[in-house]
Image (tube, rainbow, N blue to C red):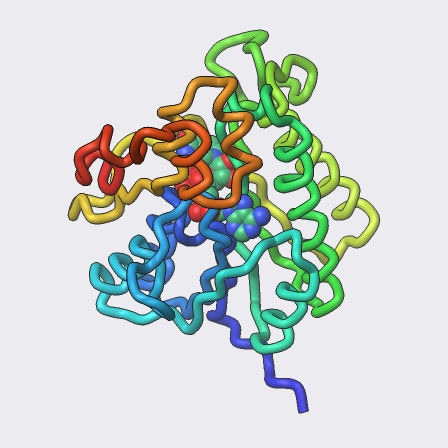
Length: 258
Ligand SMILES: NC(=O)c1ccc[n+]([C@@H]2O[C@H](COP(=O)([O-])OP(=O)(O)OC[C@H]3O[C@@H](n4cnc5c(N)ncnc54)[C@H](O)[C@@H]3O)[C@@H](O)[C@H]2O)c1
């Protein structure tokens, strides 16, 4: 028999990231149950096997509550998503998972479209298959592009002046969501178009930056392109730093807690 919908159970994608982990704090302290999903492409994994990513450990420590579950899963993997939705009856999804670096998106646009647009499509397909039709999508103010007037309001055009592939992934996803809501009226979807968020949790515990992110920032544009195609830091060291590790260039604090 299928379990009944838990009206307080939320799936959060990209949960181990910056905005996702802050959202988890709010959801848990507000009494929601949360299942967290992240592939850790831009999050610090737990140091020991089978432990939560660093940010999620800290979320639990801040709130004094445990996540119902954490899955290291990729949104583009339909089998993994199907497995998660088969185990839990979600009432809603908050969708943060995304690649988000504007400059990088100009260098590897296909990876951005596949990850952001493709991942969202897989998520939507799985949600529909399991009758989960409430979604909050973490869009971005980049959909407005170069402003036609200031301050920007929700009436401002979107898509027309987008200046980079990252912004266009958000714009295309918003258009897909609009088409979906127009064709199937039982969906309830909200897109949040925020600008760069400022500040962090007062504890200061949630500014955990991934080694991947620091590597990506550290490398110049040409090397970044290569880095995305590399599988491990060992390869990175071997290819770009034959004489020694890139880690030696940074004190630990510089890459773990920026
Ligand atoms: N931080 C900002 O300034 C800002 C502004 C506007 C919108 N946004 C949007 O908010 C969301 C969160 O941003 P953030 O700053 O927390 O970014 P972040 O990189 O810290 O978090 C995103 C998380 O998604 C995960 N992820 C990426 N692709 C995935 C995939 N295919 N499957 C599973 N997990 C995946 C990453 O590992 C990461 O932990 C993003 O969608 C971003 O575009 C961010």
